[in-house]
Image (cartoon, rainbow, N blue to C red; front, side):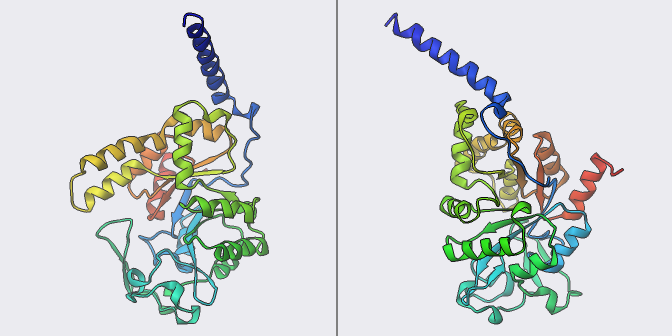
Length: 321
């Protein structure tokens, strides 16, 4: 026992020193990620509070406000068309209680004149000046054609190899692999995205985020290779505010979850990821308090439903020259 303890202590000290060293100098173990763009301002679904979400007109508005990246969601219709749409069914956005996968593209209805914004409780977007054509669900092909040089963040909403293959084919056809990030909360989908197009930037799945945080708090992270180039997680402050806005106090379980979720934005971990060339995006942030919280942990980018408000905040902090 007396021999084993000093040996164990020595091994632990050696491990701790090595972990600390490579935490600050990860490039000595891992090749730094090379991303052709930096996105400080990211418009969630094109800016759900300023336009009908995931529509071409909303994307145009976000670009007019100086966004660096468009975030969008994709699904397949019954006839195999890749459309830009978030929900699995059409009820919230069109009033039709049917799955988008059960209709052909030509059968898809236009969006309702007023739609609930699911990331801002109790809020709707409505603008009757929009013609019906601007409220149509677009094809991903149309979005790529309309915005050929704008970086995009694509959330694959279904665990469907056909969908992944079709999106990958479009990325290659429009030469977008260097300016696109894709992935899913689902770890299997992320793995298949990487297999389908390893040159396209990939964000961490929910499972991989949990593993990453565990690696970070145990000091193992500096030794682990990472295939992902983008770390995208919710801002705990924004999640807490949304829960309270939904009409209730936080339960004990929710309080515990939020406490541990603070590790998602642990500044030393974020700094380590950025030293490895991994961009850090926080979502969905819609107030100056939330924007400031993102800046306080040195996030690379902020994802928002309010592109105008975020642009004003960023320009106030760092006025354009």
